[in-house]
Amino acid sequence: MASLLVDALGHTREADMAPAPDNPRGFFESQRLTSFNDQLLASLGGDWCHPPLTPPRWSDAPLIDQITAERKQFSRYAQSSDWLDKDPRLCITLPAIQHLLLRRVPVLVALRDPLQVAASLRLRNGFAMERGLALWFLYNHHLAASLQPDDLLITYAELLAAPTSSVVASQLLSRLTAFLEAQGHRAPSSSAWAAILARRVEPGLNRAASLHADLAMDQARLSPELVALVNDAHQRACQGVNAHRQAFASLPWTILELCERWQLCAPGVDQQQTSQHLREELAHCRRQITDQQHQLEALRGSTSWRITAPLRWLARRCRQR
Image (cartoon, rainbow, N blue to C red; front, side, top):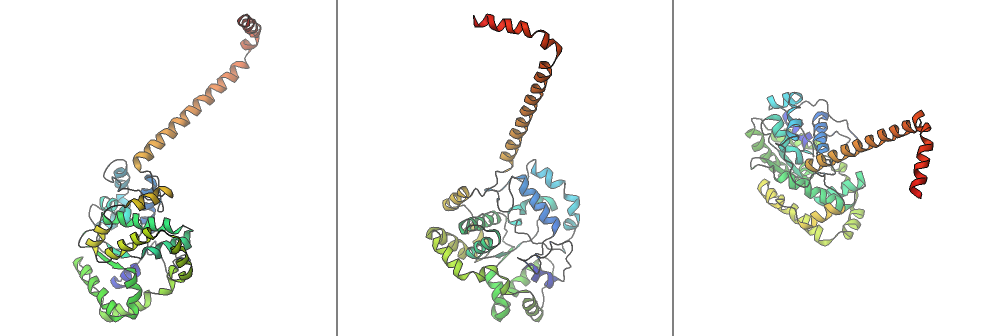
């Protein structure tokens, strides 16, 4: 979807993450934004695969201080409406970006089937399927809290079908046109859109598509309740932004149990600060013990210690009697 928007808007990319085997055509993610999102997640004691369980309090210290300190680096983003970026971490950090830019940026969501996401994470990262499903739900839960009615949601299945289905392609273009025009941008013509789809969408790059047999075996090992839960949330969320917000408004007990089992969630800034404080206290105590050991060794090696040795021996003998 990011590549389609790049072509539709005639956008020039710069300083993007380099293509990789799992994304040979490029990620369309700026190194600057991705790095900043990683820093934010690290401040919570986590990373992209250990997100916070509940939405962080981005407007409170120390997170807000970290955000405001980076405003100069993102001044071009804040002052211009002619840019786009993509990063799955934005599902979690979108409110922080709003604080960073001092305005809200419109959002386009490409929603993917949960089992395909889990299969892709298993192939790329070696994650168990249920861990991937829990991450999929968590990311969407955070995203649901940030979406607004004017944002746009499309499905990954629509994207893959669009190059070979004129009906799907036309429906996508209609919704995209309304979204872009609301932001003051022109949408491509029908012929230009068809050419962009043909050039950019390649279903063969979908990792999960090559795992039909393995995916079926893995799915058979999953709890039927878990599969039903994520499929139901996905089907409801596909109806649009408002439906997505309702489908992921809360975290079901099944997802919470998986988060605990796989130790998925970042501790959060409060626990991170407490942990850091305890580590600092422990380091201070260790330094004190080391200093006292050095003082004791220096005392035992002194002349006065050797001279008074007979007196100490006599005192011990007296105590023993």
